[in-house]
Image 1 (cartoon, rainbow, N blue to C red):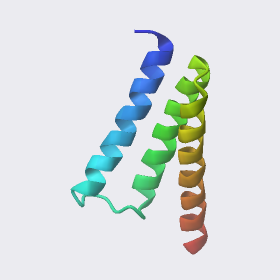
Image 2: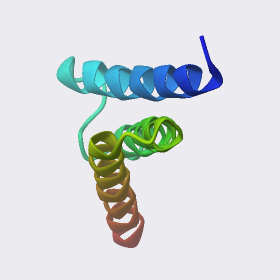
Image 3: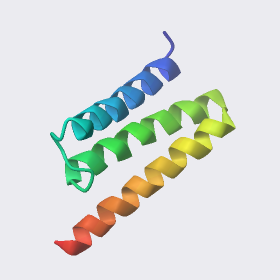
Image 4: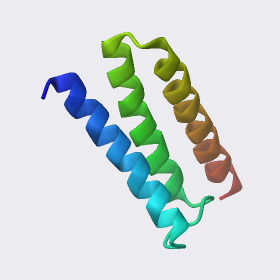
Length: 79
């Protein structure tokens, strides 16, 4: 397993954990934890995609990271 594979694997695992926790009503989609897990997971998956030079997933994961960051900022403004 390469370093790029490991980064991508960790990122995708974090995204799937967030998704699973949300589906089981353990965390809310509007919670700081959910948004932070999505931000970190998508950021790592995006980094792996950049290292692989795979544009479709750079766009997907980069967008996911940005949307999660905006959600975190919105949440912080509300408090």
